[in-house]
Length: 77
Image 1 (cartoon, rainbow, N blue to C red):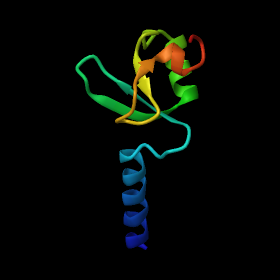
Image 2: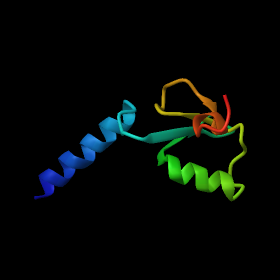
Image 3: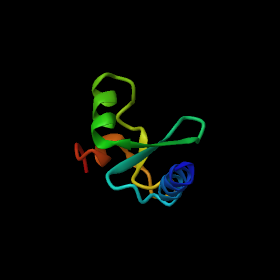
Image 4: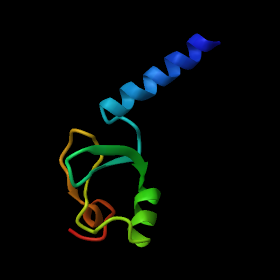
């Protein structure tokens, strides 16, 4: 049983590492560290609560192209 759990965790880590978690977003903090994955709903909620600026760099892949949070959420072009 433990080997299945370990396999599952390793698979999730691998998917996150290559940005293949469906519907996931990553953000880049002020010091350049990448955080995630987070859902679109989580990011929208944190933006609405004032935790993140509209210009926060966001991507669908930890190594992908980053765009402002509001653009990623569809609020801007």
